[in-house]
Length: 379
Image (spheres, one colour):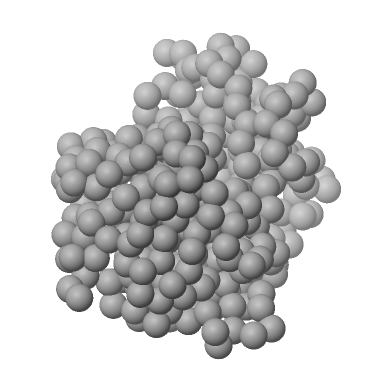
C-alpha cells in the first residue's frame, strides 16, 4: 500500500501529535488525531518554547544531547515550512541564551557546567557579570558570572500549535477533540483505537503521542513507562520600559520574553501525580527565582498562572518507535517536547511511511525498557 493511502490514527493532539499529523497529512496521508481535551492544550500551552540543548545539557545526557542538537538544527527549516504552509508566524527568535549565577556557590556550579560543555565541544563562552549586563541590561546587578550560549534559541510554542492545527486541517487531517482514547488494539495489519465512548476505529498505524497520559492507555502491556512531572509557570505582561531580549536561565528559574509582550517565568518540577493545582509555593518559587536574575519582573502585571505535566520516561529520555505490532510511540519528551518537535515529527512520519527507523531514533525505542524486544517490531 502506498503511504499516501494509509490511515494513521494519532492518540494525542499536543505539539508532538499535531506535528506528526501535519507531516503525514501534507505528504498525502489520511490522518485522524484524537485528544481527551482541546487540541494543543496541556504541556504544549504551558511550555516556554526554549530550544536550548546546550544550556540544558546534563552530565548523564550526552546521547540525548545529540538528538536535541539535531532537532535544534532542524528548527529553522521546520519553522519556515510551517509558516509558508499556514501563514502563521511561529516566533522563532535567535538572540541566544544566558545561563547565570547569582552567588558564589552558583558560580562554582556554573563553572563546572561550563567545563563539561567545553569537554563536549559546545559553542559556549564564559562571561563576567559585567560582560553579560553589557549585552542584556535587564540582568540583575549582583550576578557574578554567566555562560553565553549563542546557539540556544526559542520559539512561540502557542503559535506553533496554532499553525500546526491549521496545517493539519488544510491537508484534510481530522481533529477529534474531547474524545479520550481508552485503549489501543495492536495488530500488524489493522490496529485500532477504542474511544471512551466505546467506538472502535481501525487504521493502518496507531501513533501514541498522549504525553503524560500515554501509560494510562490500555492494550500496550506496560510498553510505555511514562510518569507525569508537574510543572507550574506564570506568564507576565511586559511594559514599554521592560525590553528583555534574551532567554535567561538562573539557578532556580528561567525567564523567556515573547514577541507578543508575554514573559514566561518557570518552572517547578514535582512528582505528585495528576494534581494540576497552581500553588502559592510554586508561584513563590518561580517569582523569587526569576527576580534573582531579572529583578525588573516585579513591576510586571501577571497575565496568567498555569500548571501541566511533563511526560517523563523511566530514564527521562523520549520514547520513539515501535511499541507493539502496528503501534508507534512518540512520547516521553519530558523537558524537551518543543525542542524535539521537528526531529520527532519527521522521523516518526518517516517510520510510518517506510517502516525504517533512522539512527537518530534507534537509541530511544520502547524496547529499551523491555527484556524481550523482538516481538514488538512493526511488521
